Length: 274
Image 1 (cartoon, rainbow, N blue to C red):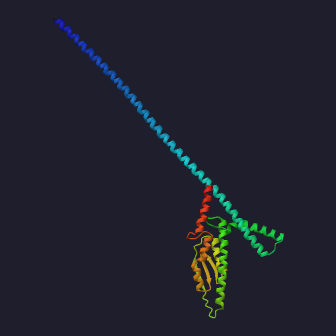
Image 2 (spheres, rainbow, N blue to C red):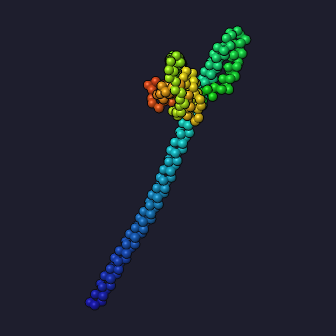
Image 3 (cartoon, rainbow, N blue to C red):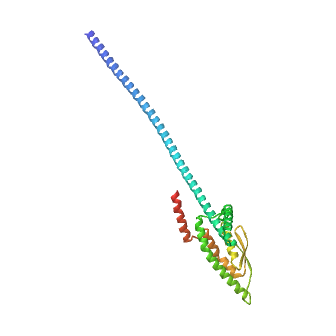
């Protein structure tokens, strides 16, 4: 009886040990599975890091490409603008040459008064040489606008100037014939709003061509003018002649309707080139 109980207890002990071994083996297998899962997770994490680095590199390449594209477009735009500016300067220089040549040749004919082939040929040659050397001086510092607009405005200005000369002649004659001769000479000193050399010269010659006033000197945009009396000085201070000269060369402080129309037309032409 005791032997039987001992054998049975031994069998139970072996069975318990076998179960424990099997459980331990299962736990070991679970541990291996967890280790494999950890390694896989680690691999996935490394892959994710690699993908993130690749994404950053791709983003950097894309930014570089966009930057290069923008710089390329800017360079192309600047190149087109440079070409267009060169064409405009060439066109403007040719127009200035033609206008200068025409003025010189007409002046030659008026002074010579001869229309034979010899004198006309000499006049053409001299006008071409002088126009080639001085066309940039005559139209130096001309602001926005093409030459033809300025020439047209100057032609319109001439009749007004002739009218002012006639009026001034009559006024001087009245002063000279008056028994009291109310002459009160003044030397005016004023700073002009005009900006370019050609506009200064135009205003100075217009003042001198008008009887009762003489332009004595110009220093850095400041005019010194001799006027016959106070009324003449007041008329000059009114600035109508200065405004008209400013309108010719598009240097007025205020906007004329014709200025706006001319600039609009020039802007449309510029848009065709850009």
